[in-house]
View 1 (tube, rainbow, N blue to C red):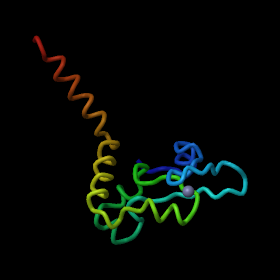
View 2: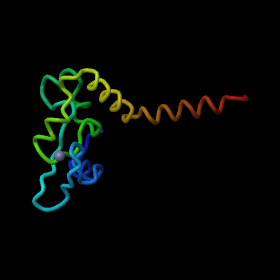
View 3: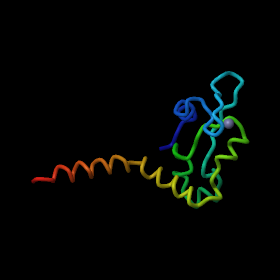
Length: 108
Ligand SMILES: [Zn+2]
Protein backbone atom coordinates (compact mmCIF):
# COMPACT_ATOMS: atom_id res chain seq x y z
CA UNK A 1 0.00 0.00 0.00
CA UNK A 2 1.25 3.49 -0.77
CA UNK A 3 2.00 5.47 2.34
CA UNK A 4 1.83 8.99 3.69
CA UNK A 5 5.00 10.24 5.39
CA UNK A 6 3.09 11.00 8.60
CA UNK A 7 1.77 7.43 8.72
CA UNK A 8 5.29 6.02 8.57
CA UNK A 9 6.47 8.44 11.29
CA UNK A 10 3.58 7.32 13.51
CA UNK A 11 4.06 3.63 12.70
CA UNK A 12 7.75 3.83 13.59
CA UNK A 13 7.04 5.81 16.80
CA UNK A 14 9.13 8.79 15.67
CA UNK A 15 12.18 6.63 16.31
CA UNK A 16 15.03 6.04 13.89
CA UNK A 17 14.71 2.41 12.77
CA UNK A 18 18.49 2.23 12.31
CA UNK A 19 20.10 3.77 15.41
CA UNK A 20 17.07 4.11 17.69
CA UNK A 21 17.28 7.90 18.09
CA UNK A 22 14.02 9.63 18.99
CA UNK A 23 13.18 12.26 16.38
CA UNK A 24 9.78 13.44 17.61
CA UNK A 25 11.08 16.73 19.02
CA UNK A 26 11.27 20.07 17.22
CA UNK A 27 14.56 20.51 15.39
CA UNK A 28 15.09 16.79 14.99
CA UNK A 29 15.21 15.37 11.48
CA UNK A 30 12.80 12.59 10.60
CA UNK A 31 13.19 11.26 7.08
CA UNK A 32 11.92 8.38 5.00
CA UNK A 33 14.48 5.75 3.99
CA UNK A 34 13.85 3.28 1.19
CA UNK A 35 15.23 -0.24 1.67
CA UNK A 36 15.12 -0.85 -2.07
CA UNK A 37 16.36 2.55 -3.33
CA UNK A 38 13.84 4.74 -5.13
CA UNK A 39 15.74 4.88 -8.42
CA UNK A 40 14.65 4.35 -12.02
CA UNK A 41 16.71 1.16 -12.25
CA UNK A 42 15.22 -0.30 -9.06
CA UNK A 43 11.65 0.73 -9.97
CA UNK A 44 12.16 -0.98 -13.33
CA UNK A 45 13.48 -4.12 -11.68
CA UNK A 46 11.06 -4.52 -8.78
CA UNK A 47 8.16 -2.28 -9.81
CA UNK A 48 7.26 1.15 -8.43
CA UNK A 49 4.44 -0.44 -6.43
CA UNK A 50 7.06 -2.33 -4.42
CA UNK A 51 9.53 0.55 -4.14
CA UNK A 52 6.80 2.94 -2.96
CA UNK A 53 5.13 0.47 -0.61
CA UNK A 54 5.03 1.11 3.13
CA UNK A 55 6.91 -2.17 3.66
CA UNK A 56 9.86 -0.74 1.73
CA UNK A 57 10.25 2.40 3.82
CA UNK A 58 11.20 3.26 7.37
CA UNK A 59 11.84 6.30 9.47
CA UNK A 60 15.49 7.29 9.95
CA UNK A 61 17.18 10.27 11.58
CA UNK A 62 20.00 11.08 9.16
CA UNK A 63 21.53 10.48 5.75
CA UNK A 64 24.03 8.22 7.48
CA UNK A 65 21.28 5.95 8.84
CA UNK A 66 19.43 6.25 5.53
CA UNK A 67 22.46 4.82 3.71
CA UNK A 68 22.82 1.97 6.19
CA UNK A 69 19.30 0.60 5.67
CA UNK A 70 19.65 0.51 1.88
CA UNK A 71 19.68 -3.03 0.52
CA UNK A 72 19.78 -2.30 -3.21
CA UNK A 73 23.00 -4.26 -3.63
CA UNK A 74 21.54 -7.39 -2.00
CA UNK A 75 19.06 -9.12 -4.34
CA UNK A 76 18.09 -11.70 -1.71
CA UNK A 77 16.96 -9.01 0.72
CA UNK A 78 15.23 -7.13 -2.10
CA UNK A 79 13.23 -10.25 -2.94
CA UNK A 80 12.32 -10.57 0.74
CA UNK A 81 10.83 -7.06 0.61
CA UNK A 82 8.93 -7.98 -2.55
CA UNK A 83 7.45 -10.98 -0.73
CA UNK A 84 6.41 -8.80 2.23
CA UNK A 85 4.76 -6.30 -0.09
CA UNK A 86 2.84 -9.04 -1.89
CA UNK A 87 1.62 -10.39 1.43
CA UNK A 88 0.42 -6.96 2.53
CA UNK A 89 -1.47 -6.41 -0.73
CA UNK A 90 -4.35 -8.77 -0.08
CA UNK A 91 -2.06 -11.72 0.53
CA UNK A 92 -2.89 -11.93 4.21
CA UNK A 93 -6.61 -11.81 3.50
CA UNK A 94 -6.29 -14.46 0.80
CA UNK A 95 -4.43 -16.69 3.22
CA UNK A 96 -7.08 -16.25 5.91
CA UNK A 97 -9.87 -16.97 3.46
CA UNK A 98 -8.11 -20.11 2.25
CA UNK A 99 -7.66 -21.39 5.79
CA UNK A 100 -11.29 -20.65 6.65
CA UNK A 101 -12.40 -22.44 3.49
CA UNK A 102 -10.31 -25.53 4.23
CA UNK A 103 -11.33 -25.69 7.87
CA UNK A 104 -15.02 -25.39 7.04
CA UNK A 105 -14.71 -28.31 4.65
CA UNK A 106 -13.35 -30.63 7.30
CA UNK A 107 -16.08 -33.07 8.35
CA UNK A 108 -18.52 -32.19 5.56
ZN1 LIG B 1 19.50 7.08 13.10
